[in-house]
Every structure is written in C-alpha cells, then in structure tokens.
Length: 393
Image 1 (cartoon, rainbow, N blue to C red):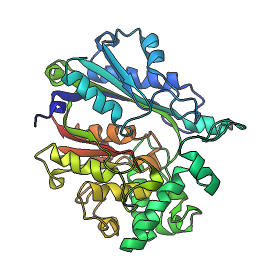
Image 2: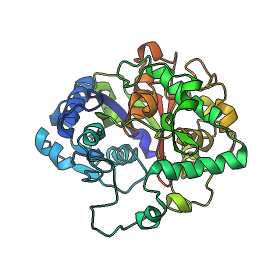
Image 3: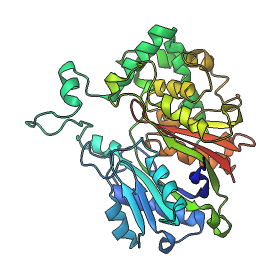
Image 4: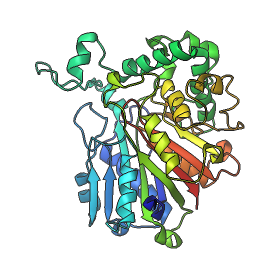
C-alpha cells in the first residue's frame, strides 16, 4: 500500500497570543497565527493555494469555532485551488489529513490549516457552552436522548467511559491524576502556557468533582487563541525557511458505533480503531516514538489513547502512568510536553500538533526532549479520533 501522506510535510507553524478573556475577535487571532506561520516558513500569502479547517465556523457554542474559510480568503485575498472545512470528520486532525490528501494529489501545493477558539471571552460575556439550541426550540440529535438524563456535557460522557474502565481494570484516581500533574509540570517550562502554578497530588484530590471520577483538574481550560499550520508538498522542502516535519502516517477511523453512549466497549473509544490503523500505515512501532502529544480534553482521554496506540495493553494505562516517571520529560515516553490542554489551554488538539512540531525541530527550550526524531499526535474522544505520526525530515 502506498502511503500518499508521505508526500506531505509540515512547513510552517504559528501560534497567536494565548490567554483567558483576551477580548479579541477570532479573525484577529487567526491572522496573527497565520502571519507567524508564513514568516516561519518563508512563504507569502500569494504562495497559499489551499485552506483547510475543522469543524468549520459554528454559531453554537459561542467561541468554539468563530472563523470561516471564506473570511480568511477575503482577509488575505487568497487565490485558492482547493479548500475544505466542515463539522463532520475524524476529530481535529481532519484538516491536516485533508490537506495532506490535497497536496499529495496535486490539488494544492501549500495548504494553510488553522484552529481558532474564543471560548474564554465568550464565557465571560455570558454565552456559556450550550450546544442544545435556543430556548423554546425542540432539542434534536443526540441531545434529545441525553438532556432528559441531565447529561449535556462531554465531561459526563467521558466520565461514563472512565467509570467503566475503573470498574473493569481497577484504575484509580491517583493513577489518572498523573496526567494532570505531568501536564502542570511541563507547562511551568512553557512560556505560552496559561497555568504554570505547581500542583500537588493533594491539590488534585481535593479539587471538586465535576462528574465522577473526573475532578476540576481533569478538565481542559477554555482559552482564546489560534494555531496555524502550513502543509506543503515535500518537493517544496528545499525552498522553505524552516526545517520541515515529515508526515509519516495519518488517519482517522471509526469501526464502532458513532454515539458517545452507545459504543460497543465503554472502556475504550474510536481511538482504538484509529490507533490500530495508524501502525498499519507505517513500518515504525510504538517503541520508535520519542514524544507523544495525546489529547487531554479530559485526563481519561489520554489514558485511552495510551492503550489505543499500543504504548500499553488494554486496561494497563493506569499502572503505565503511575508515579508519573514514565511519562515525564526524562521518562521513556515524554507526554504532552507543552502542558497539554489541561494546563497550557484548550487549543482543541492543535496545541498538541504545534508542540510536536516544535519538539521535532528542537525548538522547545527548557522542555525540549533531547534528540526527538519521531512524534505521535492524537486528537479526539468518544466516536471522534484521528492521529498522526511525524518525523524529523
């Protein structure tokens, strides 16, 4: 099988100002990230002939996806040969996967991918995070089955999976706490992270419960910010200003049911399917990975990805992270080295991608993993899952 994604490379990155309640528009933050990505790559707006995003602009919840492809095209006066953006797809890396396919098949040469959020400002303005529609409207979709049972939030759905895992395998809160504690230690070394204050096990165990067994520190932090990543054809590598990162393999898969509450095995998720497919698309193995950036919208999602990607057997993620040494910057699998979403802030998966590229380029400063050559990035939870294996070019 020919893996056409290997014709793609990640050729430029940009991170906007990131923070809580910045009060800036989504377009403003996005353009800042794009300017930095273009400068990083040595490209100009005239070189960009593709645009890709996920999930596309959405009115609700407010701040979740405030910028459209059309706004960016007009703001930058781009001449697009290809573009794509929409809500349905295998999680946040959908835009990168689509961009890889576009450059591999000649639809575009340089595709600009972006992810922008203004959730923190939206919350400060009282908009909240409801996905259920306006007052007075009939609730539709999956929410018609969940709202009657007071389950409107992904924290509740994820807690269902976590409880099942705890019950079947004996996983403990003290083990899961290591995901949050490790993230906070790494965030202290990341100038762009939102929360850098030290966190102890006592802090974690004393935090209020959001949905058993998830506590406050198991939930990611809504922020304002944007990330831009340029996907180019590998033939462009020699013309770029920065060291590029090779896409070794990328995929999204869904073999189980598409509902959070109706999956065939509630101790795992679609990550199981995506992880299996990722390794089928490369000769590399989990043992080759130097750094892992695994989705942590909730701490349990990271445990699920560790198992799905074969870093440990099903049911063994708790013992795998116990004590935190194995996943530390000095451990055998440095995990979420920039602080992840739990401490660096919720950039909805693109923060993980940005950090992976920085690590492979050797530009992570005090948190740099020495000699990092291979990174895995995983996004999504429940029925949404996508992952990528990246390598130093």
